Length: 130
Image (cartoon, rainbow, N blue to C red; front, side, top):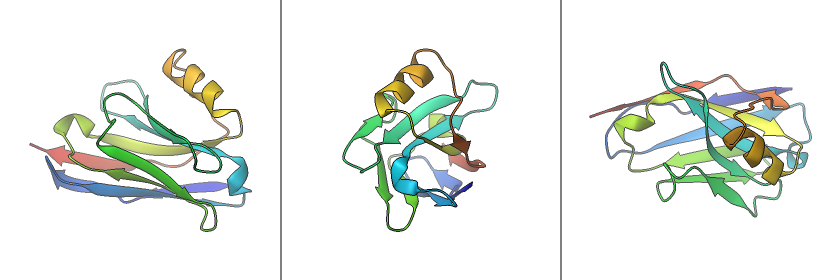
């Protein structure tokens, strides 16, 4: 199984980036997909999640209204559209896949800070300059 994240880069504050996570060698539609990020010197944090069918999306308060998560089960991709980027969004962004119920994923990651997901991709760096 491989999750390949791409689309990171350097952007000015107020700009946009679109991250993409391409999954291979798994039945993609069985997995809820999650984006996390980790800034230098800080703990990894939840950013957004999308259910298996794509019908439900969840966001961290810090990105709500600016970021949009989506998926295409035919293409095995999960994307994160990031608008109105702020310097505080600078981090390495990771995608992850997990078969647990998405509500469980949200609780264990946001409340218990447990990031033991089924699969992780390598991160992609996002840098937002002021």
